[in-house]
Length: 106
Image (cartoon, rainbow, N blue to C red; front, side, top):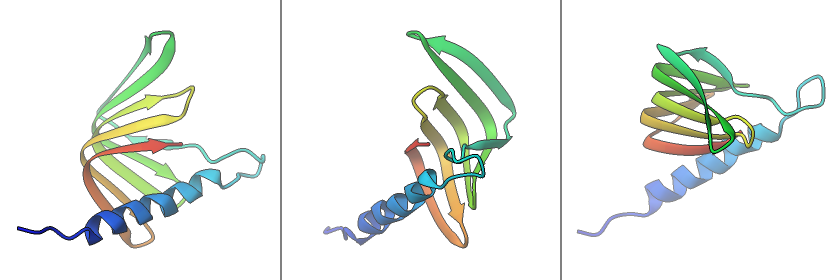
């Protein structure tokens, strides 16, 4: 069975557009940060000398007009890398991306 590449191309294009919002500036001139809106549990840790925050259960973030949801999120605070796992859903002004896992850089 031959599979279409169109869903992959659309997904990659959406991620590029979503990441463009990362470079938006707030009133202080800095980049907009992710805002944690909800999580059943949040745990902070240090792994190999790096601060890592993990959020579990009904995790919901916001960055400007983009809302991000997942079952579990790992956030490497110093480098701004975020891994969303399980029932991932990004929504931005009517556009929606769903996936099992998303790697995102704030």
